[in-house]
Image (tube, rainbow, N blue to C red):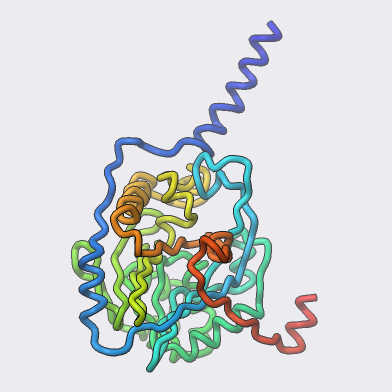
Length: 313
């Protein structure tokens, strides 16, 4: 009797644990095509100087169990972050994502918010020529929403696909209603578009309908593909596993099969194109790794106003 009860208890715990945190999703999912030749061609189609360097600001950070963002990731922990990326470009920068407010960070589950780095990101956004996003998630567009309510000029810098623009308008209707059509509507059925010299995007719906990857080629020829939420961690691609079902479908609204297809496509692309660096959406440990990371420039902190410094203590 005791043995049967023990086995029953194990089943009650083990089965949900596997289903929610370990299951890698359907094995029959085919890799989705990532047309790198088309992205390169689109990035070359815009005349002008390409970006010369890339900087990053981790405006919110956390340490999470490895099995949350990588199904079956085990008991190890991963350092994660909300990133704002600055493509430093002669004649005007392009900013990828916009950070978020402290309230938005806490609501999104991040334990540590860095207002001094969000202030740096805000300076980047104000000085930028254009602003693009890898997703319509609040941790990608939240900073732009906060800023556009006080600085109308920010809205005119936004280049987004229709889903992203809809999300911005919903969150900041008084201002965003006047934005008009997005400069890059991505009307191509495959969702490809040129953004600026050396920069192109492709739609990758899965984790969110408005998700997209961003291709960047620097003046020195180095190439990067910002994977966004399709692959938040480098192990998603190395192990070809999506988020856990708990994170993807219970907490989020992910189409896991679609996301797994993009992950498999990224794994194939990485094998074919060893000179192309994949930039994972939220992998702070990888970004900060001096050996394995992308060697981007860490953003300097901006000194907080006295009132904010006091509140932050």
